[in-house]
Image (cartoon, rainbow, N blue to C red):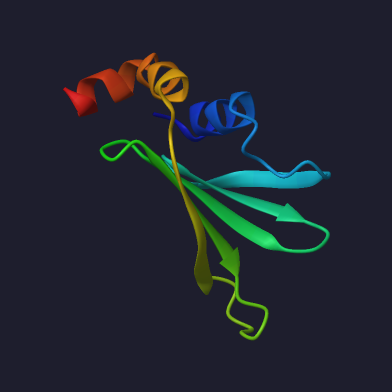
Amino acid sequence: MTPNETYSFLDSCRLLPPQIYFWKPFTKTTIYVETAQRSLLYHVDLYDMTISIFAGDRRSELSEHFLPVQTIDLNSAQTKMLKSYEYVENVTH
């Protein structure tokens, strides 16, 4: 799965912030999202079929210090959509 596919999947599932944001790749299955209010990481777990969201720690000046915020279990429609990506098919089977 590419970072662009990760972004596309999260956008299709409407899991990204509703306000204006900037995004960039972090890893193949994680994207960095920055809004005016905060910095977030969205990680797609291809094995557990979950989305983990981490927020930048405002108490830390370290840009890479993120704290867990939420884990979302994908529903059956989202899981089916995620498995439609060729790379995911190979990983999950």
